[in-house]
Amino acid sequence: MRSLSQFLASDVSSASLQEVLLVTTQTCIEISSALKKGSLAGILGMAGNENVQGEEQKKLDVISNNMLKSALLASPTVRAIASEEEDDIVPASTDGEYLIAFDPLDGSSNIDINSMVGTIFSIYHQVGSEPATEADFLQPGKNQVAAGYVLYGPSTMLVFSTGHGVHMFTLDVEQGEFILTRENVKVDTETQEFAINMSNQRFWSEAMQNYVNDLVAGKDGSRGKNFNMRWVAAMVGDVHRILCRGGIFIYPWDSKDPNKAGKLRLMYEANPMGMLLEQAGGKAFTHTDRILDIQPDGIHQRVAVVLGAANEVDKCLSY
Ligand code: F6P
Ligand code: MN
Image (cartoon, rainbow, N blue to C red; front, top):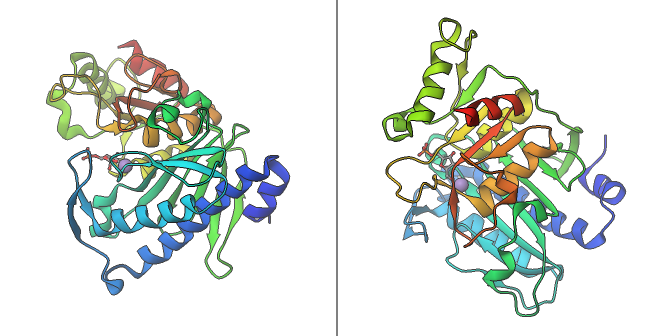
């Protein structure tokens, strides 16, 4: 059984990328232990602030953000960070070669019910000169040198790609180390399972309503097969299920939003998950474009997301 450090040493040639992945994942192990203590550590509940997206911050959003922020900014490999919980990018004092965008605690409303949450990260090469600016981060997702997430579920799992397949690691709590448990994960091209927040149905485009109606019609409808539905309400949990057993995950734009952007954020949700899905043989699109091709116009930009089994993503877009 290979540990994460052994895997990185043999499979990731750049020492500085190894370092930035180790710092990120080591901090996630600390976040995992904080989450395990839950109410006992007095860290549940609201922080009393709103983030730049106008969402109320939980204490654990703030704690996880601060942990990742200080660990990454202290690493000589990091030039700057961007986070869901920071209005602006935060430059490091070093001339490190990586930019890291992250969602410190995805699905944080699940904390209150002791359900799945996770940390999502996306790593780019620094492109501009010093000091780093927001413009340096605005690279399409296909430029990511690594992307992944840590899922805090019944076990804590790390899933990432550096562009050579998707690999899953499970935290050995006693050793405080991630151990490789699945190499080269692949997602089937076909599926009979979908994930979408049905409560928004009346706000979707007519095409999206037709597509989902046909899924729900099952054997009796035009698709001629039954579909199951699952919704974790944390993207990280829904994407993990798709990597483990297939499916399609959709967060469409809806008529509440005049810009036709969805709820999810391009730079630290859609792009990293898009890279993982593509590396696993699946697809990741908005309602029109390949997510990894989008030229971002801001670090907190939102996009519609359709990702998962390749043929099912094609089918959805064909509507
Ligand atoms: O980060 C946003 C997020 O929490 C995702 O993890 C999740 O997929 C989505 O929002 C759930 O939103 P809702 O259930 O409110 O539609
Ligand atoms: Mn999130």
